Amino acid sequence: MTRCKICDSGNTESHSARISPFLKERMYCSQMSGVLLIHCNTCGFSFYDPLPTEAQFDRFYQNYRDDHYQQQRQKYEKWYTKDLNSALEMDKIEIDCRKKNMSGLIEDNNIAIKKISSVLDFGGGRGQFIPDNFQDAEKYVYDVSGATLEYGVKRISQILDSDTKKFDFLMCCHVLEHVPDLIGLIEKMKRFSHDKTIFYFEVPVDTPIEKKIFHTFLDTHPKICRIYNAIRYNQYNENGFYVMHEHINHFTVSSLEKILISQGLHIDYISYVKLKTVAGNTIISCFATIENAS
Image (cartoon, rainbow, N blue to C red; front, side, top):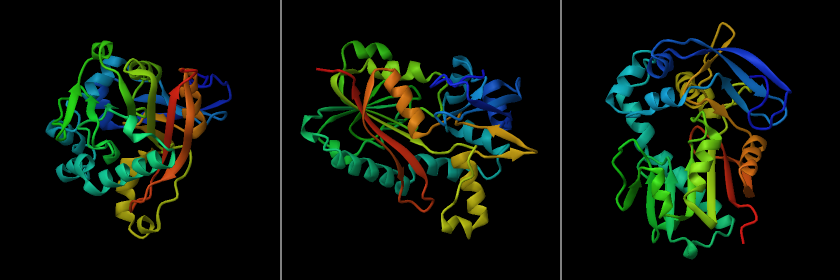
């Protein structure tokens, strides 16, 4: 793979990379060790080559973050404790911050809340990130992990449900960076849409190509900084090698915009947003609608 899989530019650079020991065991059954990190100098997208197969991807995310996952990961990453594993799913500060950010963007972009009668969080786990703006709407998650859902949230677990169920608001938050088949996932989302559906996408800004400037708090707390770096950016660099972890796609505004447009979506808003957490991590937020919808 020498061309960008989003914009098809040949202006790419390749970097030797290794697969993290945890990923190697859980996803690849210890049968693979080396990959390339491909960075596109045109749209800024970074990804690994080869990407995992669908079977390898499913193996990794089956029973995601259950006790076995945590124990398996801590075997290689000693700091990945049971408490930390739980906090990543349940941390109230993180949940409230992300919900507040999305709520503010919904208001700033004049989304007609009263016209939203149904919301689907695609890949949304328990539905904990559905913003409070939609308290009167039907709330669903498309999720196959079997996670216990938030009160009032219903589950959709098969794509065939899209034949009868369409949604006014489709959100996909912190999912695209994990999946090998980006186009396939967007196509699945679109099956749950109608011509007036509003799409919301959110991805982290965490490319390992660029050095990250940490919040002052982290700069003065090196241990926390190292843990934050490992969790959020996965920038292990062993003897000149980048290391592939859970995030296998790394986006810029340009690259996210290009892939959504290529799949028939019109971009209504897209921007970098710095979250107001201690870590101050940056995300990309995007609202889109079906192109040329009447």
